[in-house]
Amino acid sequence: MVRVGLIGLGGAAERIHLPALRSIQSVEIVGGADADPQRRNWAHRVGVPHVFEGAEALIESTHPDVVVIATPPSSHRDLCLLALDAGCHVFCEKPFVMSVAEADEVVAAADRAGKLIAVNNQYRQMRIYRKTRAAIARGLFGKPYLLQVWQQMNLPPEHDPPWRAALSRRILFEFATHAIDLVSFLFGGWPTPPIAPGYPADQPYAVSARTPYPLPAQNADLISVVRLDLAGDRVANLVFNRRSHAPQKYLEMRLDCEHASLRISLGGVARAEIGWNSEAGRPRLRFSFVRGGEVRVERGGQSRVLAREPAVPFAPATGQHFRRFLEAIAHNRVPEGSARAARELIRTVFAAYESADRGGALVRIDRPVERSSGVLQVNGAVPRE
Image 1 (tube, rainbow, N blue to C red):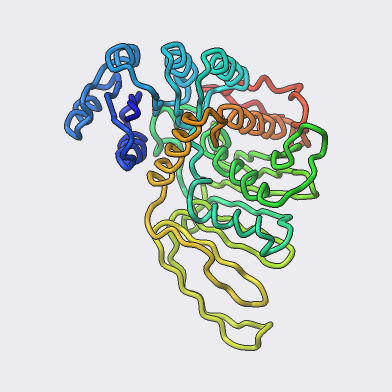
Image 2: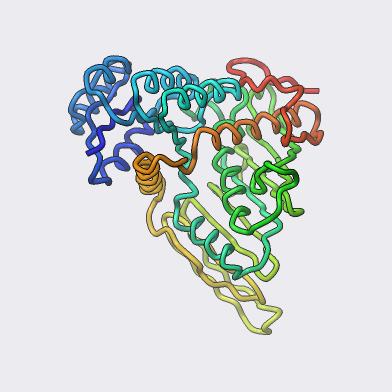
């Protein structure tokens, strides 16, 4: 059995990490820690065997093999270092840490300790994305060249948890790492030469971004438009809008390939469409109703389902991610969603913020970012030109 301790007993633990861990037969949850007494009481009620106020007491008393960190990101650096110093592997909730410098510090500590870290960018574990990548890798649709990503909802900061509402650089840092990771994951299914030796072809090498501030007294990037350039003349365009009055779309993608387009929807799908297929010269009827998401292949005026997520997939995907992490530990290999991969996501995010601060200027990220400090601002104004 793998002994697991859970630091942070809030919403992420309740909705994602505890269900994920309990789905794995080889895992024993040995305890939890949280400074909030109400959360500790909740953990007792749902069967967490030992609950502590502090992370140090949890680790010293229960001696876990793996520590799961499900706290706000401002605490991730210190908790990662604490767990590594105690000889534990670490499974950390995203966002990984608050800066590129913190990521480098944690990665170096893991190397010294001989321990592994995985960050819970778990979307790539979902069936709809893995099926899509597998089909691309088999050459079913030809080369992928354009990925459009969008999210639309009305979610002002006051409706978010306090730690998230306090971020003045928010939407790219807190959410977009999922989308950027999927850009690399999906484009990585097709072999492409890198732009330079040693630079991964599935990583963006340049970024441009705009973060408009249309509302009075707005002090957070609630709207972001980002373009990512990748090797092989591939491009991704991402639009995040949390001040939209249109119907909510949690995460939508359209991936255009040589021979087909793929529509990938996450967050529940309820569609009924009657139209005219001009290419086939006949009516078109489409119907979708799933709680999780789906992928549809579109070409020649036709649409068919490639894969579906019948249920809400966040906890199951985290469970699958954790299983693969345990396999990586057992075989001493780099896990999916490693700390180094998470560091590159943070580097891309801060390059996007630098571009936005410079009015949308193109920022190359195949070399160190020169102007950006790479430090997240909390409760401070976002600089603008």
